[in-house]
Image 1 (cartoon, rainbow, N blue to C red):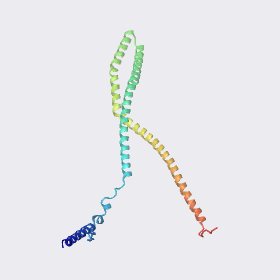
Image 2: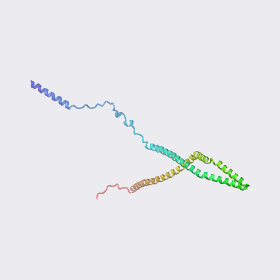
Image 3: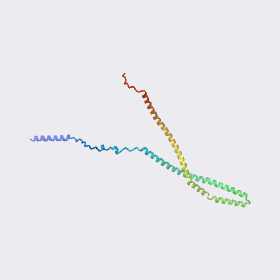
Image 4: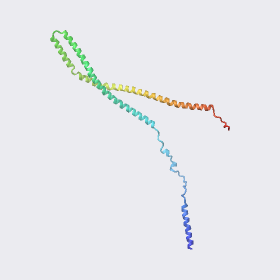
Length: 224
């Protein structure tokens, strides 16, 4: 009796172990509700960004060109103005002042000499010479300061505009020459590139004409 019960219990335990070991996961039941990846197009949520490389490059290039041109023009204009001011001051002071002073002294001396030659007596001649000398000293005493004042006024009022005009003309001439040189190089490169492309296209079309003129035989090859 006891042996029969033990046998039955052992059989039940083996069945339970085989049932647990052989059990598989239940299949997914289609409940009709779409998944998130099926209902929403992920590409519409994150579209490809528009390629604006050419637009940004053109805008940056234009801005940099304008800024560099303005800065360089202002810097060069200031340097040229300063240098021209110094040169004009030195040249006018050295040349014009000396020339004008010498010419006026010569004219006054000639007039005094003529008056002395017409006068009678040495005393009158000496008085005329003294008066002429005093007049020259008096009238030309402030000449250097007046000349410098005129130079400063001209450099402040006329020179900047003149330098700006000349610099603009020089810049346009240099830019025109550079553009012409660049255009020449571009034309040469374009000619080379298009020549190769057109030659290839002509060759391809020529081959097409040859094939159309002499089509391959449609009959199967005969065995030798």
